[in-house]
Image (cartoon, rainbow, N blue to C red; front, side):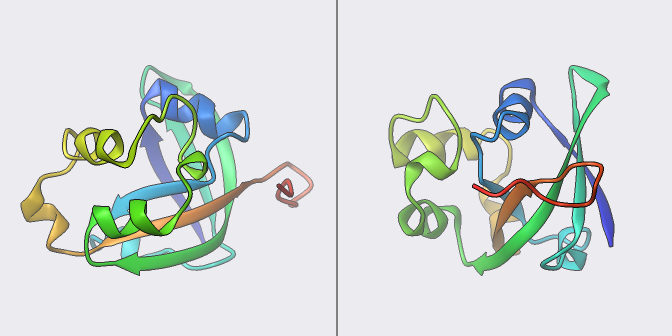
Length: 121
């Protein structure tokens, strides 16, 4: 199955350059459809013509964001990450604690090329 999502520029380039391996999202109705092996097309919100394709390597459900950031090494979330506290503060600028009650997802991704192979890390 194919999915579309948007990313802020910094996050977009982290994915495009193979620096971000985990995308964090709310487990809303749209994200509940994502399965291992699916393809996600990310668009850069600052330039919607820029796109990057990834393959879902794994997807894990968590109760809250803190659990995700406690579970995975910080380097899985891209560059410019100093601490778990910084990640949590950053995610609450995007999602509310009320939205978090839906549960959250750690979507492990690998770059996907036109030959339908994701780039191994």
